[in-house]
Image: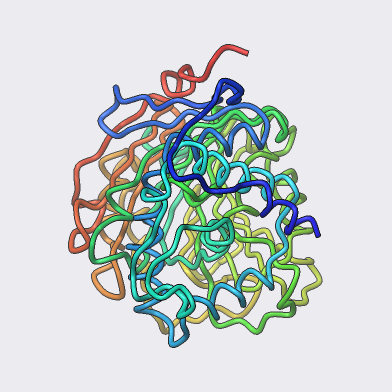
Length: 426
């Protein structure tokens, strides 16, 4: 009933004609950076409405070119109608997430014309006959269907050239041939009243509200990785992994123990697939360490849904003052040492050890580590980030095109203090 009511709130019009009663927009786009920054603040509805209003003309083409013509058409044997029904029927959205996504759709409807919101592709469900307006359920699908590869590292102490935490990640996945997913990459900066007032930045695309690569104003970062080959315990009541990751990020805000806070946010959110959620933090927040990895799925385990992997918990590959993650577990199940995921772990460990002998990983050394594990098959390294706690910087690399890995592309460096200063005064 709740979902039906939410669908009823947004009725398309022939033209975008915001009236005098249009709500105040709690968002703005900053074009002064080399890559745009979208600022969003307020309640969940206000945040969602602002994103939908400001980027309504981008979501339809992105949905068509990346999800329909790319992900669904190239990586599934089923038509979109079947896939959407299966995914959305198994998902249980947190009430706040659902309100934000629904408000995003309303903002789209209020600020773009039917023509701008119309999607035309043979990869729609057969009943659409190749053309229809984007629907709320499409946004719900887009926010639930995250299945990504990736590699990441965190170094601190003797393994870091600064002594403080440096977190690097490659975000890998199959991208669309048209490059819409790449073209629409931006940095979103949030202040969410209903999530404890948390402020964080997310490297992602319009229309998707979760965290793939996020960092808070306090310097706590989380990067998400897929872990496959698991037998799931649950098939319904699933929390979209991007949105579960967002909840973990928000939970760290002003927390006495960021690891405990993030884990507690994750435990009640069921998962279908496996995840390595790599959490890093300045050493001042970590009791002498700079990062952990949450091995997280819906399977049965004495640890519950989350096993926290601390530095040194993988003794065969232990590196002082460092922890890494790719696409397999080290603790939650016996690690597979035969595949590409383990090969990337081994490369990261070897690189960190070599740099530690030479004074530790700096930003340039971090980029070299990302180069060493960038994907040259089964997709592309879509974006890469380097988060430097000592310098309070976020360096973002986005692939120039589907044939070029992100670490081989130009970067934009954001000063975290300047980035979050763009939010309005409270």
